[in-house]
Length: 473
Image 1 (cartoon, rainbow, N blue to C red):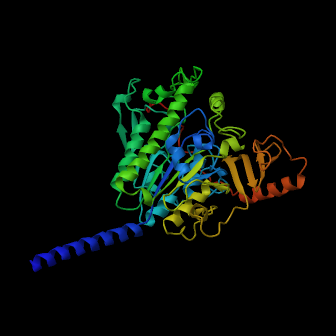
Image 2 (cartoon, one colour):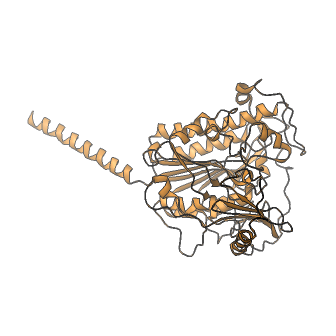
Image 3 (cartoon, helix red, strand yellow):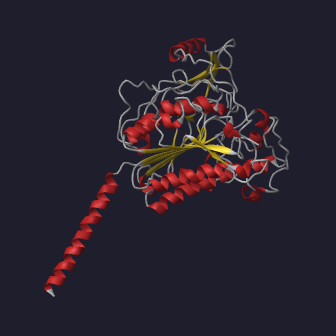
């Protein structure tokens, strides 16, 4: 009897010791990082940023239980350079890719956030729109630190939701159900499922899941179940796409709202998966958009939803509506709930922040422009701040540029045009050009802009333009 009791006590002690070891290991495991980036989602197209017509409860909950930034900026006013800034930690005066240009891409010598985290022991996966190197080039994800990739290498291909193939690592995954104008597989859903599979597979080790989802970039199309809740709520508005081969909508406002809500639903699914796997508390989630809400043909659609309010301009503009974006960080037990920060941050700050989260450093010899905002996230330590934030759009020569220093914002829409000057502290909508009243400030900002610019990489123009032929049938 005594021996049996002793054996039972020994087993119990062993189990407690094992549980303690597992708990200690879990506590010591580096945090997982999920970075979700919408495509062309405006500053105010989420409920937590003032949206009234489109429902985004899951993203709103992330904000309510985490931190919302009100002065966060994308890397650029358009997608490709914005992604280069995000990956390299360098603003567009220094990063490799500074325009939407097939021939601009990352090279082997470029260091990405994925490479930094991979070297720190992270599994790395990217799911969605890449835009920094096409087939056969050193810029593709597998050459830039990502273990897995599902999505579109080219930004033009990421415009489509029913292509008949998609990249999966280094191979083309064929989708015959989307041939001959069939709509058998909504590509955003496939990308999302692969992202969830990556998280599931790597639940026992630290992982970096980069989710540059393609939604809600036009073309305007979404499965019916996402449109149904909004049917009849908005004026029925035909929004056709002027580009050959693109899908438009007979009820465009409803379609767009459904696209945003589908994105929100999928963010909710990511959170639920983390909870089911028991790793929610050890996972930092960041949600943002690659640039401002859509303009041009779709300007009226964005404006109907007040998608960029109260900012001026749209995607493709150096005004606030083109570059200021929603930015939410959520990390249970680490980031206090219900916080709002007016710290001025930008995409080039993400690399040093995530490196610090992972307990590693940016490699010596790698020049970045970013500053870690982890002290602000955790509410601990002294937060360093930028002297200025700088953007340029460069294809050959600089075509447009902007700078923010404190509340001052200077915009030069074309290089042969004068700088405009705004005080964002009193004029967030950039309605009053103060350049004539403050010539010395214009002179100072112009000098900083010149210092912030380095000569762009001399890309050989070897890649031919790639259209939609061979991608959409």
